[in-house]
Image 1 (cartoon, helix red, strand yellow):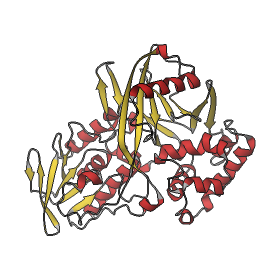
Image 2: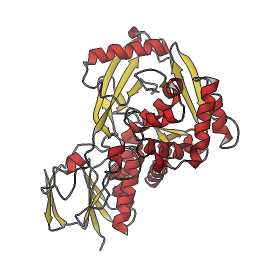
Image 3: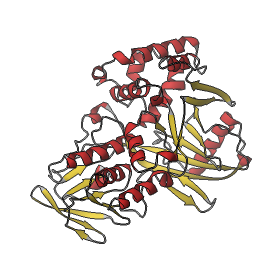
Image 4: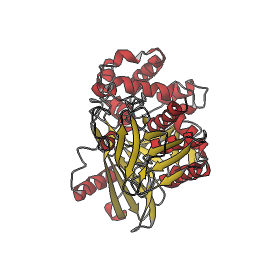
Length: 426
């Protein structure tokens, strides 16, 4: 008889757990509290503009091996746009376009010469930046465990210009927090993954479609094709334990007692409400950082590239969706409580400064605020992230917040799901 697992949560971690288990002969039942899959990464139809929009734009990279393997497993890898080589367009004020792109040379010379030609920073700073990249293979990141990203950059003699035009954009995008808060060890581990794993690792991958069509629907089809089931609007309200084992799962609709294992793929703050004994699942003390997405519809779209990084702006990225623009502000706690009219004025000013876009070109806009988008990867927190095995024998944790060695990214979530399934299979 097939063994059974219930997965709680339908984001990337839950879907990857369910997909990997169902592909290995388990009968999987996934319970999702909301009426949709995707967690913090989904799309929906904006009725006012009749446009499918994402709740938040996500960039993938060639070094996201776990995510790419998951998408291949569920048949969704064809839903991505792949770069042949690294190419990122940056904007300075007055529509001044500068590009960071790999040169037509063999790896790693292609990346190093790409940095040497990055005209957003001075020649002297390009040499300093290249010096840091050349040292990466020899870096033991354990020595950075008490340093912030800012401390490390100062130690490496990276001045304000190169921080603003390169390091901050990369760090805030990857870690979603200020470089004076973020762990240098975690950041350097990330850039080693990006720059030391071949030409493909540093390339950018973007979804062709809305996030739900890109991965949620293929994951659902794959799980169901392999004998699993997806239950939406099925909020778990209690996990009933007997000794060191979960015996029953109570939802708003049913009580489940026929399972061998449970994977919790929901955030810690949601999980701790389900178990009466707080000592079983210890609170790691995570703090969270927000992300602000602004969707802008235009009379005429002046942009030709798929995405742009903005240098020296509170708006970090502009993604060109053809039908509209998706602006992203990471580490947005200082903006999240502001009045939307004030935020809109700020955004309009930035668009005017960077792409010479007048306000009267805008036909509509929509703000989406993700208040607890990611945990803050500070030095005091990254060593407190929980392991996936718990004091409850048949409960495994998954999610971007568990100890994957990665920041709170899609890659971390997918990795945790794959590892959760392997703990059960082994």
